[in-house]
Every structure is written in structure tokens, then in C-alpha cells.
Image 1: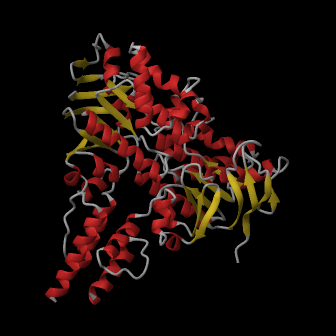
Image 2: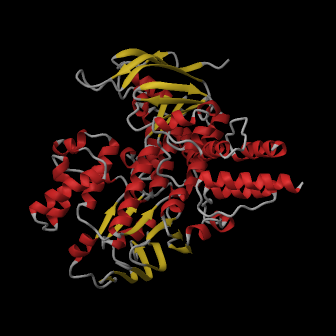
Image 3: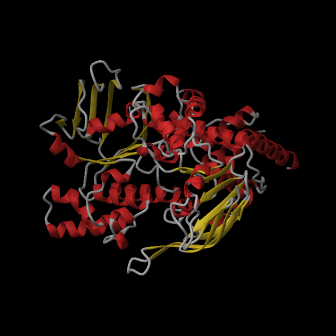
Length: 290
Length: 279
């Protein structure tokens, strides 16, 4: 489902002394099947933005369209529930939303609400449990007896069980250990590819944006500051510094390398192994030319 | 020689008699004004260490001594004056109706007089860059802002030990750097030992000493440089290594000799300069 924002603003506590514009005349377009990373420092409007994607918020001004669903200040879709069935949002610390007696019931809660037949729910729970890397033995356990990482997986499984077309991830790996972070991001990416999802990742991690996204949008003060391919946007040091962001560590290193050795190795989202070979070749070349 | 501020003596902990040991025979010491990082996979016992340090949990075996005092049911109120703690999720730790009330809360509990309180609220909120929000209701703040306020509240009680239990995990990278700078500055001004429990490798690199936990036991304890030399082993126990260490590893494999473990860009570039002159 294509997602379009047209001149969207969102104002908290309008017409009060506390009035605050969290999103300000924001326009963008996200085509179906893309993986977009939204980056911005704390308070840039990221969280407000994503709450528009499943209709938890409606724009104060402007228009949001998600597939055939249209949200404006005055109108909401007749089928808000249908929209929420298509757009799955994994909020920050989703494990805080667990509430059922067993893991199985918690994962099934979403699809039950969307009147998915019982048999189908059974199948989905089984498949998704496996996909998010939970052992089937946990299904009858209370979600509150699990470790933090496992609880996170249960909560995510609950969102995935509704089979959304659009998957919105708000810092999904915060608090997990490095391996847990990598496993979880790889899982989302794999699912994104296999199921042709439209994925929106809100993140602070430039490294994740580089690794997974094909499109990056930088937010600042509730409005779009930059957008484009990760390798184009995330290499602009000055522009990013101006909005309290830094280039990915590899880009910082490549700049420092260029200062010292006088050769700029281009940033192409290469792996560390590939970069090492490029550095070796530059060093050998430099030696030969002396 | 710095004074010993925290001592774990053969500490073991489990949640119940039938439960597995979460912490197994852990012993370590932390000194005055020292910056320590504790790393390890989820469930390795890191957070348990933090909770034992200020008496949120008590060990079944061994003893914990903080500033000369053994942690017991009777001593926890005194211990908690020494040990300040900030957790990962700030939503669980707010009590005040405004930011300044919240920062005042810990001080009120310790009977600090008003004039001093006002001064400390000012100082700590500006240290974390939140002064202009002093009258804001905490629930209106973003996650990162809340976390700064939580840190201000703890710094205001002048603890001897500050434990950050993944407290910067929700901050953006710049916010993270700012907080760490603030704490470093406080450490320079007054005696404060810092224990960061973290997955952030930049924070680990900045520590003087790193304790690596694995499955409830201390796996290693050394300076960051020595720790990150053990790349393959660290990966095996589910941990990551910093970009510089990973790139050094790949450079070696690609036939570029790296003779000294580099911790930052500058050091790695020096290494490359040396090896390029001899290639």
C-alpha cells in the first residue's frame, strides 16, 4: 500500500497556551514494497508521524492516504478497523502491551479481533512463533514469565499475526543485546522481502538504516529535512550535524582516512570485509607510486 | 591508591530455590571515581548485579559491601544514599507532576534543605540540558527527554556510585554522547563512580575497565583494549565488537598487518600508516 502525506500538520492542544506543532507541513510519498528508515533526533516528530499511519491520530491539517484509506481533520475512513488490519505497528517497548494469560492467547488476540477463523489463527500462531524465533513450548506459558527478549518477540508476533501489508517499527530492537538486535532486524528484513511488505523503520541507528533501508527520510522540527538513498543522504556530514545527527561510523572513518592518506574511498554500504580489501589496495597503490 | 567503593564477595543469586542461579560466585571490586562498563548478553546477570547493589535484591550467598557497609535489609536506606540508579525505561520512574518536582523528589526523601534543593535542581537540569522544561509535566516529554530528567534526579542526590542500567538505550546517538559528557564532567567535579550496563560499544570503549558477564558468571575483566582483542570469543558469547575492532580484523584477513589493537579511528589510521610504510 502506497503511503502519502500531503501538507500534513499535527497540533497538540490546539488553541491552548500549550499549543505545540509536532508535525509541520510534511509531505512525502512511500511506494509499496519499499523499506524506509525515518531518522531524527528526540522530539523531531517521528512518533507523532507513525501514529497517523494506522489512524490513531488524524492530521490537524492536510491529508494522509494509506492505500485507499484517507485521513483528514474532518473525515476518517468508515473502516478504521480495516485500516488497522492492514497496518501493523510495533510501538516502543511492545512487551508492555502484553496482557493475556498465555503466549498463545496474546498472539491470537489481534487476529481474533479481526474475525479471522479459528483454524486460520491456529496456523498463523504456529508459523509466526517459529518466525520470530520463539520455541513452541512457550505457547502455553504466561508471557510474564518470559525474559525481556522473549516478551518482545511475543509482542511482535502478536502484530505480525494480523498479517499486515504495512509494517511500522518504532525502535524495535532497543534494549536487546547486539545479537538479539541483529537477529530481530534480519527477521524483519527477511519478512519484508518474502512477503513484499511496505516497511517503515523509526530508528536512531544510522547503521541499521544503511544496512536495511532503500530509502531514508530525516525529520527535523516536525518537517522533512532530507530524503533519498541511504548512501546519498547519510554521507552529508554538515547537513546531518545541523540537526544533531552524525554520519554512520564507516563514513566518519572514510573521511578520516581521506584526510590522512589523500584518497577518498567512496561509501557504497560495503561490508567491513570489502572495505578492508579496498583499504589494502589503496595502501599498496600508494606504496607503488612513491 | 583509590578507595574501594563497591565490593562483591563470592556473590550468588537466584529468584527461588527451584530456580537456576542467575549469578554464580561473582567477585569484583570498584574503586572511587572509576568508570566501569558491564557488558553481556540479555540474561547474563548484568541487571541483577545492579539490583543487588542498591538492595532491590539480596544474594543467597556471599556479601556485597558498598562504601564500607554490607548491604542488608537494615542498611539499604543508607546504601541508597550512596547508590543512584537509572533504568532503561523512564516511564517507570516518574513521580513528580512537573520536571522540577520530579528532580526534587529524591532530595526531599533525604531531607535536603530548600535553598540547596533549588540550587541542585538548577545545576542538574542545566547539566542535562533540560532547564527550560522545569515546569513541564513529565508525561509530555519525549523518551530521551524523560531519561535526561531521570538522570538529573539521581545526580541531584550526589550519589557516590551512579548505575546506568541501559539508561541511554532510548536516546539518539547525540543525546547519548551529551549524557556521557555530562557524567564525565560531574566525575571530574566530585567523587562519583560510574557503572554503565550497556550494549553501546562507544560507552564501553570509554570505560576504564570492562566486566564481561556470560551466563551468570564473570567471563572476563580487563581494560577495553584487552577485551576487544578477543573478537572471536566475544562474538561467540553473543556480543558485538566495535567498528574499529571489526575492521582491524578484516584488514588482517586481507593481508594488512595490524600490530596493535586500536580502539578508535585515530589509532587505527596510525596503524595503517605504519603498515603502509612497511608494505
